Length: 212
Image 1 (spheres, rainbow, N blue to C red):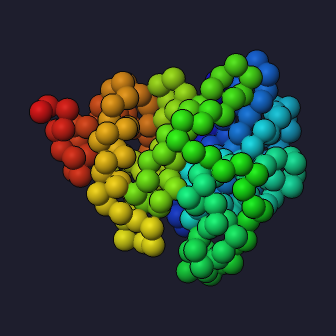
Image 2 (image 1 turned 45 degrees about the vertical axis):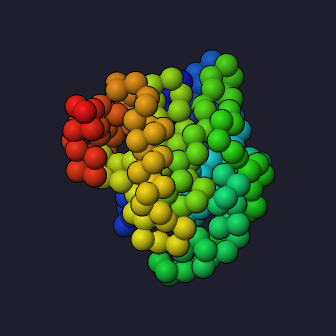
């Protein structure tokens, strides 16, 4: 499996991921933050088959390109069931607070913990990691984790927005993500990549948790 990273919304630094199976060319787009002709052209050039747009959660800085890519590739939007209503309401998805009024196409599939997204023979496992929002998810393929806005390099997703809960976020990280192999690569919704080991050792919200 391969992936490319795009920054479609520079003011927010949202990471949009294009992920595909090299054998079948089946692909997903994770968190299309905005319209991107460049990413569209890359998809066409590589002859990828977009199976779905997957939102790690329902905030406006992660869903702004849903309609564009869904229409271009006749692809459904996947999101956790707890965040599905956010797609349809600019107040709930907070886009109204950034001067936009995003109303996405409705969820074509409402995800739950343990669901699998298949690209050819490759599988991405859905891990429900609430805390930043009630329906935040991470996606795991082997030792690659797309962590959305749950876990960042030396930081975590904010919990002061509607639906946020710090204790829930901490539980998601400690009892789900930190149980993954320490050499798992973490590809977050914002910022640079990291590893589970690095975050267990250096994340100031947890600090040396792997040593106790």
